[in-house]
Length: 421
Image (cartoon, rainbow, N blue to C red; front, side, top):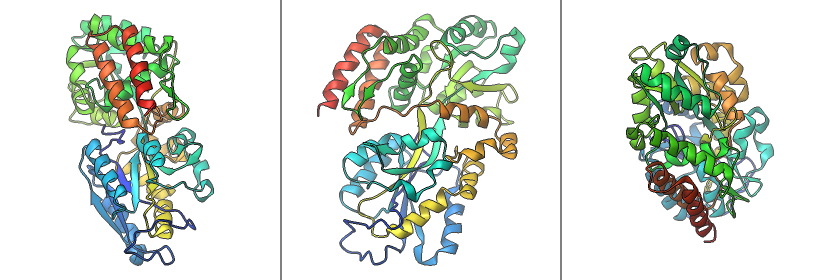
């Protein structure tokens, strides 16, 4: 997903080791010495080009600790595969900027090292984001970019009808079913193609009904619940009743964004970048876009946290330099540029209250509210398999191949098989 990567196109893949943290397992062909030296930073495609200038600033001030940027494929799956190959071979990367959903998997495999909490200003971050960087009650990465899903809506249509933005699923369904056709629009869409985006949308539906999917770091399956049946039923009902258009079953981030931006949708669940695109002058709906937190079963819902974390490769020979780079990339001034140059949501809490930034990015207060109420994707050392199961089962429910009740029973059984491996 473009903003989850997370899965993500804006993701860095960095290998970082912390100040004073001795690099055990350093690469055999390098002498760790005092822990300082050049670094290699790998990243999925930097589509906005913001990262180069940030690293130029670092390199000018640290000529003996220069960072070499390596851009990995744009696809999150390919990026993850290349990172794992490098980590297993104790290869060339020094700092990993990993999708938040990969932290548990990488930590459980021993590819990234636990990090001392006191080495980083975690109290300056949005509280929820720190949880994405932990596994087994230990910090295994440092938050770098965060994200949360928002509900975008046509504020001109709702204003004309005298209807406020929805806070519950019932309100969203009613407007999507009745108002959207009246104005020649489809009702609601998210990212419903069977890929990571559907895992996120499904998890948000379950969470927003008060349920969970896994517990105890993936060791316990908790999805067989009334809440899960209600959440998956909400998505399946939308397709069956037509207020979720069938073409949305093939939507990823870009396709859903384009549908909204072209003026074809009343409501869209997406990441904040879609708000920016839909509000741009060339958009068909420029000036007509609002954003609110996701609705839920009985009130405001729960978004899944997106973003990326900086993790330390177990094989990095330059822990001191890596720690300094982490401090640089998570400093207030650089985090501000992550937003203004990269259009990526920062993890620094104070930036969400900055009047100048709010004027430029009006969705920031809503995004802050959504992040603070958000939850991580299901934690598991087998997350890739967990995600594949969720995608397949929920897509079958949305296409009518299974009832929501049968889908939840199947989901519980298949997740139990994954967790027992």
